[in-house]
Length: 440
Ligand code: UDX
Image (cartoon, rainbow, N blue to C red):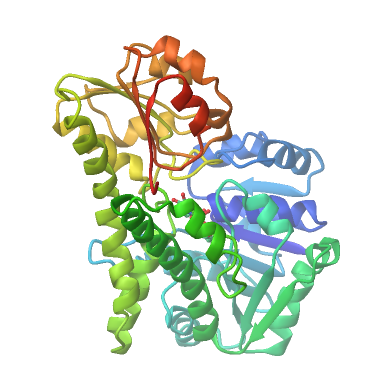
């Protein structure tokens, strides 16, 4: 099937290469010439595992093309909108890119083609798009909503192995067309994919916000339990070992950390609160999740600084940070806890030596401060520092030899704060590190 994609960001590009890899022919549009130029050469513009090889294969096999010219979509049977819906200052989602993409699309698309919103949009948005199309005399143009459930860093794997898919369209024909698009993926997936079809756009929009907000709530709740464990000499790891045996809770998304970040959880939880305001419904649980998560990032910074101040003169010390991305497996630093924590260290006149396997460049763009030195190597980052703080759960940090770290840091008993609980704690302690694991 000839499929169009407007927007080649994290969602649009991953969706496009996966659909192209599954036998479809993809035409991808983006208004940024430099992005289109790079992608046309098979050079990815985002970091995602397996993206390099998949994009190169699709470009070589001509199953994907990139252009800034919207007329390239004129003979597509279905066009997905994967444009950004960032938060406005008031917390509402900015839908301007959705409607401007629709306007451009309507100048070239034939009326038999289906338009599918893929971006995460507030409840009620797709119905507004339907009304917008009708007002323009496009009553016959089929409109669908197909939310994505892709985690950054493993987005290609998530796309090719979906647990569930949601197809919303006012016409069964449109729901079936979406099913047809995904059929190769469904056929190739070993486990059973739950396909949810609905005539209600609002239902599909609410599914997306519910999943993300529920996961954000789960994480935030566990971070509060970890704080309490820390304050009461309990061990949150053992708490998790016990409760995760309960099938009603499950094993995943229980890991305490420095606070959730990324381009989705912070934005989607705020947007859901705004949806509550729009419809006059109390969404105080998810509102508190958002506030608690912000406070939690500050708590982690205070926990580190207060622990240090009990033992050493913090002023002028050098703190090494391993991990700047909002999670392992991505170069994305949007809303990363590292931003809050590093900026708290600057306020104490602390010099920060940081390393992230993929996030250095993005972090430097976001946080440009004379107290910050970035290193391409975790060993160079800890050299001659007094404290090591682990903020992102990259595998490389787990595997590093504690002895090598000790040889590079200052003093015989340097401090280590492991906010993700990933380091081999016994080995570090045996060597004399003063190691603090969040939640222990
Ligand atoms: C999320 C949803 O998982 C995905 O389904 C949706 O489509 C987009 O938003 P993403 O934001 O890429 O994906 O990352 P995710 O893996 O969900 O992690 C989000 C944040 O929660 C990260 O900061 C991560 O470090 C944190 N997290 C996750 C924890 O602190 N503990 C956990 O156990 C899991």
